[in-house]
Length: 371
Image 1 (spheres, rainbow, N blue to C red):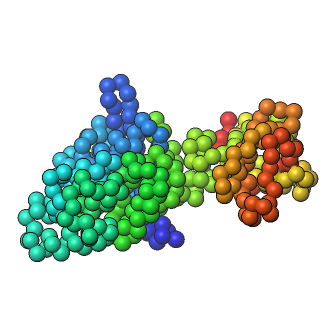
Image 2 (cartoon, rainbow, N blue to C red):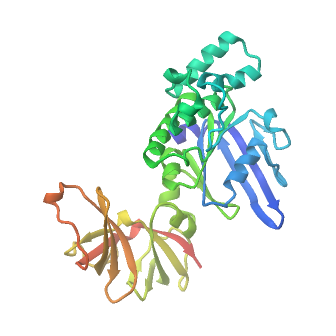
Image 3 (tube, helix red, strand yellow):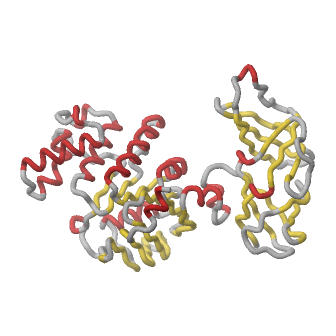
């Protein structure tokens, strides 16, 4: 709902046909992205995909070889970093060690020669926003990693930038603190209403807070969409594999709406993309979409694909078990999530080498590639 309210707003940041080459390496290839005012937009991809290079271009630290970058309709790619109304939060905090928390946050306003009374008022306001009012007189060395990052965020926001860039700001924190600060970051975004551009390689982070996500690989944007669109309807096999966990089902189209392979035989496919008889297809099937039981609840038919198998491995994770099931007579392993809904003593867990049936509805397998 939040995204659909925002998407009607004007463009805030526009990246048109941007490319960048370092030596013989093409780092960015014809990047086109439009970000709406007030969006929480994530650049997501593996290391070396070009997402940080793109962020540094928006900040003004790197110039594009071609294309343009605009904020509120003004082309900025030839402006110096300090001439753009853009601030960056880095993963290493970049705080002044000889200044207190208050002085660090106040620094951008002092540079602008803001009146002392206004500085006092604004600093306390933004320290309250990040929950650090009681720490205003401390030095950065006495703060935890999460507190340092909050100071960095407050300092970046106090000058009211058009766009706040976040370069993997949580990567230096431990897992629990990272999750906590991620929630706080989303809350701060909702309160200030500034456009956030968030760079991360962590799929869960991006899915948790983003209005939209651009998935990148090898200098290209493969898909832009809401978290739901990216997860449920990936543009290709790379996106499906990179976002969460999945199984790939491959086959050859034998008639309209049906494919088959040697491992699981004939199966119905949802025609998410145009196909013709003879095409090779690849479908993504998320582990949570698959049901597993010791007795078949359905027969193998048009709507449900039912397969016999053997539990090859069980990984207990508390709230669920990850099952790796080997298809009978084949080497293919299928990954399944078995959710633990009842108290452990009232629920029997699947065991290693147990014979099972697993099945899915054909609409839950999404067609990602046709060739």
